[in-house]
Image (tube, rainbow, N blue to C red):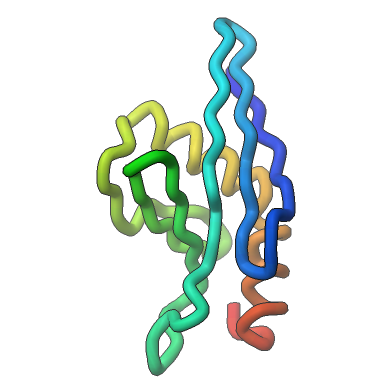
Length: 102
């Protein structure tokens, strides 16, 4: 089982440091918004990046994977769980940045 900690790293960026208990594994993920998310604004979502991998997650009352480039299925499951555990924080950050549109 892995646990992730959201760390505020900038105006539109969060990083998650994930540590797995079974074996020592450190995975640093950057969760972020683009400042231009379309016109009209796309529904609430967050992007995730890790050394060449990129994913997009839709954020509603649950988290769904929208796109994935390079993450394995197990990494995506872990990312989804971390986002679900922090869905309120993500939603609040989206609303703060995009003036309450999530």
